[in-house]
Image (cartoon, rainbow, N blue to C red; front, top):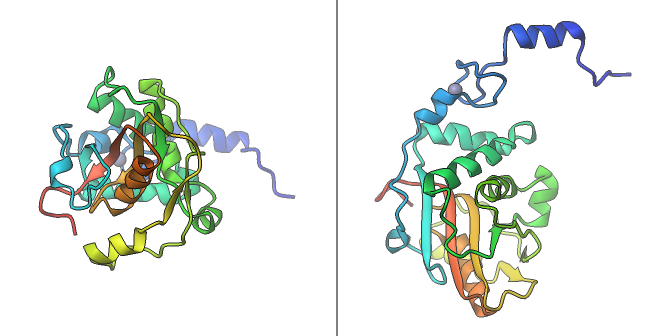
Length: 227
Ligand SMILES: [Zn+2]
């Protein structure tokens, strides 16, 4: 039988030699998965509404991101793919909310993580956007609703598709399964590139009567770098 408890020697060695940062492999920061130096190295945006520069923006009223999606942040975001490290998402969420403004709420009624299709979710076991939304919720006190959107169509990875193909690929991929009439919703995801996924969700929310839809992500490519 494999013991799930750590041996006293293991605990002592972790205390004496805390594990190194999972992003840079160097820093040791009290057992935190990502060290404070890595967070300090991330390039902050100016947190202003940049919706005018998003290529697919139908249905989205405002868009906010915390950092530019540079190499340093790509290393941190990459950790979200591994279940052992996915809780980094909560920290990214709290930092995103703090940087946008602890008193910002935009009169938002609910935070809605962009859902993964159930096949993908079963494979991965969790949705990383849920962790990010949880972190934002801890700062802004706005409830997270994971029961509003449903991914109705399996969409393959979009990285090799161009803008028009992405829009086509996402058309009707997201369904609204709860009443959102008159509500202000914030869609949450890790990265906003072309906005095709966000826009598909936002348009669906608007069609079902949502009053306002804001897109909030941890990361965005630098202007002119989105594909
Ligand atoms: Zn680090």
